[in-house]
Image 1 (cartoon, rainbow, N blue to C red):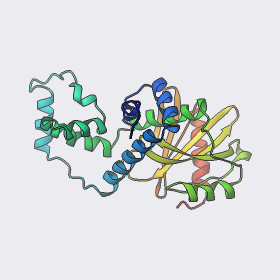
Image 2: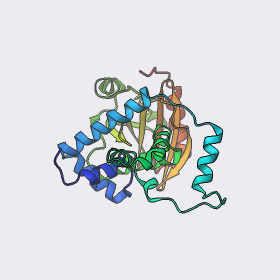
Image 3: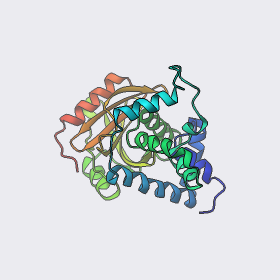
Image 4: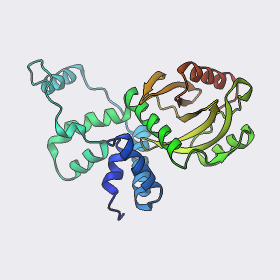
Length: 257
């Protein structure tokens, strides 16, 4: 791979950029084969870790020892070390360079990667929602017909989520697209509700994030599990409106694949 923006792309994929720089990095990546290849490689690694790596919880004694070490054994929290702010990929590069002292931190990073906090997921989804609104990638397939959008997902995405039109209830199906959140590919169903755009993200449910109602960067997010999918609706519409759409999707009675 040969691109002067690879490190920036890596930082973007590790969620280390603010929204403004993330938008620039995302737009660059769409037009750069080298950066897209980096994204795809990272996606393969992360998916492999989530689906094939075994998970062994740390014994209570080890957990207590690590907490004491991080607090300097004095009870008061110390300033976060510089390496703890690095993303998973950056830590992997440092480990490959022979910094054995970071081995313990890398193990902790692996747990955080497999079990990302809800707040981090919310920020990632909100950033993807913003990118879709300010960029040119809101819709890959434009249609209000479920029989057009859902089969399109089946041929282009890892999952085929519900894609019903609820225009009679105020939620008109606009279409669908493929997007990436934290290097994980998602199927996105797009709705219009008045002046608001609602993106409904769907992934295979790996059980690593919890459903619920959150807010991030001024956007409301409602997430839930739909059979074998994890779904998250995001918009600047009110949370009650998102909950209504979520209920409509769950009551639609269509199976997911």
